[in-house]
Each structure stands twice: as C-alpha cells, then as structure tokens.
Image (cartoon, rainbow, N blue to C red; front, side):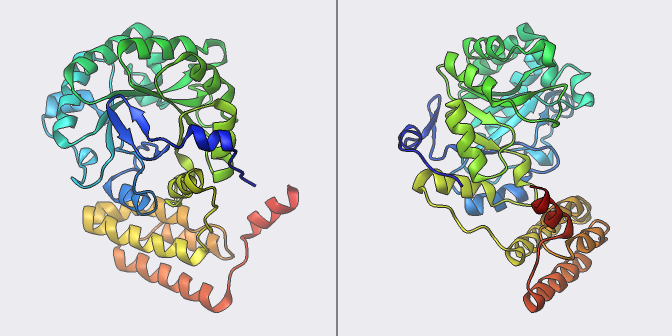
Amino acid sequence: MATLSSSLKDRLSTPLKIGSFEVNSRVLQSPLSGVTDLVFRRLVRRYAPNSMMYTEMVNATGLHYVKQLPKIMEIDPNERPISIQLFDCRPDFLAEAAQMAVQEGADTIDINMGCPVNKITKNGGGSSLLRQPEVAEAIVRSVVQAVSVPVTVKTRIGWSDKEINAVEFAQRMEAAGAQMLTLHGRTRAQGYNGSARWEWIAKVKEVLSIPVIANGDIFSVDAAVRCLEQTGADGVMCSRGTLGYPFLVGEVDHFLKTGELLTPPNPIERLECARDHLQMLWEYKGERGIRQARKHMTWYAKGFLYAAELRGKLAVIENLDQGLVLIDQAIERLRQQGWQPEEDEMLQLVEV
C-alpha cells in the first residue's frame, strides 16, 4: 500500500526544473517506439495534463537525408509540455535534427542513449554510446550549441554487468551540458529482463546537480513511491506500465500531489478507453492505424474472465467496425455478467 512520507511530499512539491523550463509534474511518460504517437499521448494527457510527454525516437540520419519530418515527429501545438527524442551517433546530424525538432515545437530535446535493440546499437546509436562516452559527450555539446531549449539524455546503467559505468557516464553528460538525465536501472544486456537496479539510480543522483529521473519497473503507484524513496530521484518515468493502461501517469501524479489513491478503472472503463484509442488511430492513420491498433487492443483486454478470448480476436482485426463491434460486445457482456479475474491472474494470486 503506497504511503507518501512528508519528506518525499516536500521534496517533490515544487515544479520540475529542466534548465530554464518548468514542468508542473514529477511523473513523465516515457518515449516508446511504436507506441507514444500523438494519439497515445492524447490519451495519457487526459489523466495527466501537466506531465511531460515524449515522441517516439526519431532517426537523425533519416532526417538529414530525407529533409522531411516523419509522422512520428508530429506534435499537437496544444500538447505541452512535449519533448522530441532523437537518436544517432553523429553529433552534426543530431544538432541538425534538434533544430528541426525545435521548429516543430519541442520544449526540450531528448537524446536516446539507452535503446538496447540491435538494429539501433549496431549503427552506433542507443545504448552503444555507453561504450563511447567521448562520442556521447560530443553529441550533447553539439546539440546544446545548436538549440535554445534544454537538452536531456535517457540512458541505462551500463552495457553489461561487467561494464556498468552509469556514474561516470552521467557526470560526463552533465559536464557536456545536459539539463536532465533519465536513467533506466538495467544494463543493455538485460534488455527488459530481471529487475531494475534502482540502487544505481541512487548513486547517480548523489553526484549530479541536474535532475535525475528514475526509470524501470514503474508499474504502479506503489512502485513509483518506493522508487522515489529508495533513489532520491527528482521524478519517475513510466514506460511499459502504460501499455494498455494510459491511466498510470495520471494516477502516480495525483498521488504525489495529494496523497490520495485514485480508484483504478474497472474493465469496462478500460475497454471504453480502448474503443476511443481504436477510433482515434483510425481517424489519424487510417488502415495503418488499424494494424498498429491490434497490439494496443490486446494490451487493454486483460484482467477479466474471457479477456484471453477477446485478445485473440482483437489481434487480427481488419477494420474499424470489426474492432468496435468486438469491444462493444465485450462491454455489454461485462455489464450483464459482471467480471472476475482471468484464470491466469487467479493462479498468480494463489501463488503469491
């Protein structure tokens, strides 16, 4: 059960200062490739209007050669605060991309130095920069010189258990001009396996003067509070916990500000949100939006009896009407029969 200590409440009572920019929330929505498009961000912002949102990461090399903003870089003029995340290993390309991002309306520029995916690291981007701190430092200096908005970095604690260099790397990023650092408490080798090692976030926080945001295993309000208590971080960033659950950032933000736990949405309310998500993806992206919606819809369909059956059907929808009918039928079934936990959830409860 989450409890908000007076010391934590006092520490987080003021706005988050990222250089000259202020954010009236200490809870951030992580950039997630294939997820945090304009539609998803709008849903998260329904419940967390003051939180910082991030675009999906944008390839600076692609911007350099194409000279045209990709759709993932598109932001709503009214969706502030907003950061555009970039990745690459070329300081000059990243500086150029950052200028384009600022023109698009970004309040801050975030540089991805933590993505563990092979297709990113093999080209020198993402978490591979943990092995090239000189290049990472040059990147930050180049981007800071190119734009007037704050530049931030998102990274991991190291490449592997034998190459954990979070403290030194973070110090170099601050020295290069980064105004905030978000640290995922896993190594690149871990991917998303095992537990996030929050103790390394605490070690980094001890040596930096810029804000440090904790990332990794923030799946609930309770986890967010425990992480903040253990790390001394200036805020938390929610990632995979928001998949099919765009309520999480708002729930954590509300608790940190008030000490009050919001009542979690019930399965009907989650499916109603899924319906909105599907409709909005169709309106924004058409048929491509429907294809992308399949994964989102399966993430929403959890926590109630027959959810597995619904997930199987939503995973193969071909058009908007098909998806809406399935969701509406599931909502009506829940209204008539009530809901019980999924069988696998009940087993988990017994095991615990």
